[in-house]
Length: 155
Image (cartoon, rainbow, N blue to C red; front, side, top):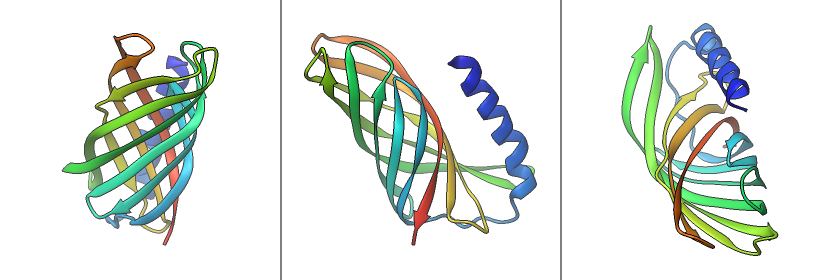
């Protein structure tokens, strides 16, 4: 799985400068896909300038929980350019609830830090996020989460 994420990240780093011209952050409702650990699935965001409500509904790759619902909030707090291509560093807090599987219920909290890129001509966001996870239920523990994906915004 780590190799797949690395390949996708490299493709994004190479492809994004070829498609970028200027910045146009997308607001509204976005729906797409999120590939990562511990959850893969359908991603959604509601963007309001620098603040976004986020979520993923998908299957869990760790533990006995099969289906997760992640919900949280993030804030774009830093902007930087790589050869004129704008990227945005965002941070937030996300809670995950396991809803199906051997563990009928699980709960965890994450503090992800991510990088987002918004395409100029299309209402698309590409993102990469990584962060620590605190597992609360069924047992207290720590872990790691990460995802790469894309969203199409309906404006």
